[in-house]
Image 1 (spheres, protein in one colour):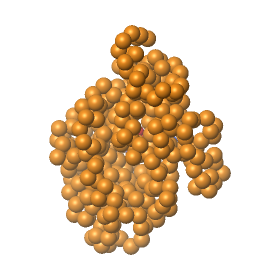
Image 2: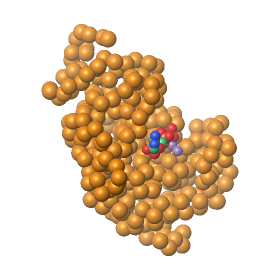
Image 3: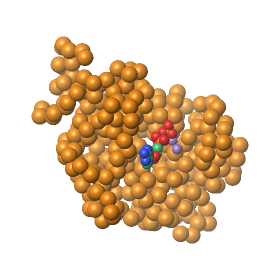
Length: 307
Ligand code: ATP
Ligand code: MN
Ligand code: MN
């Protein structure tokens, strides 16, 4: 563990009174990133992260033994031991402990204290839990796909969505691929939204079959891009923008302007090591707030979709 001035200086970004145990424990052997650094990132990024988390059920990826150890995907608050963690109405997921919401810095850092690395959210807010307010398209590069093809594919997804009257937001996954998010005014229920997202992906794969596949399975996607719509069902989650990833290098899922797409080098373009340059810039999704008012009407008409 490193002691001395730099660590002491950095400690000050963490709120007083935060109990961070095993702070100097290395969570990623490939970089030497410690639990303290993760907590410091969470504190620095809180003004970006919390708006992504507030109001939505959250699932957690915990790595009690670091990312080289076993990872736990946690959907329910079965211990009630995380500081500040909000427990949601048990009726949302009957037969389980309550779903969780992170709505404060205390809860965010409380999660880090409990060895949480990744934060994954639903596509609906608690206020309107049966009517999603966004669709997420998960772009996964198949085996052997060259990265520039991935960039072309993302442009094509955007073009198709534009044609359907849907403005979209882009982010790196912090892992291998990219995520395209389409916010909209809640109207349809989960089943309809998932079916519509499937239609969009099927349309894409039918129009550009040499580039895209709609069917999962590694065999189907060799040299192609799998666009996963299964993130759009009730209870499904996707890593939140600004969340770190429990993978070597600790990539971060980062919002990107569409104009910046061609400059991306991978889904892990930003990591805990270079994320500050990004935090220093205005949030690329800041203007995306207006997209919350867009509707699915044109998309439904063009695709002849009847919910
Ligand atoms: P990449 O760009 O590398 O594909 P990604 O975030 O798109 O990164 P994954 O990390 O494979 O892809 O995402 C896994 C998906 O499954 C997410 O929707 C996540 O919320 C969910 N998930 C992850 N682990 C579990 C689990 N153990 N149980 C249920 N769902 C999980
Ligand atoms: Mn993916
Ligand atoms: Mn996927």
